[in-house]
Amino acid sequence: MDVHKLQGIIDEWIFKYENQRPHEGLNFLISKQFEAAFYAQKHSLVSYLL
View 1 (cartoon, rainbow, N blue to C red):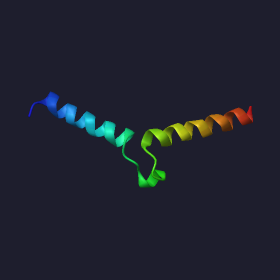
View 2: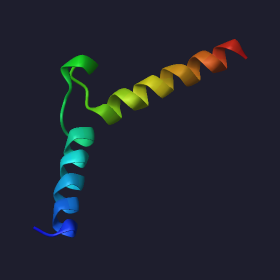
View 3: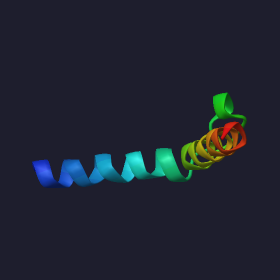
View 4: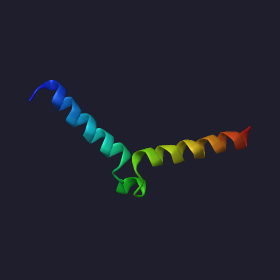
């Protein structure tokens, strides 16, 4: 197996892990959903404080 094919397999796994797989530790959200909610909450808190 060459390096480029292996890199493609790894990239595909990472994409699925971050964009399609729900995580029990994140209340069954996918990583990107959790990240978006986190920054939305942080942004609204900062707006509230200003």
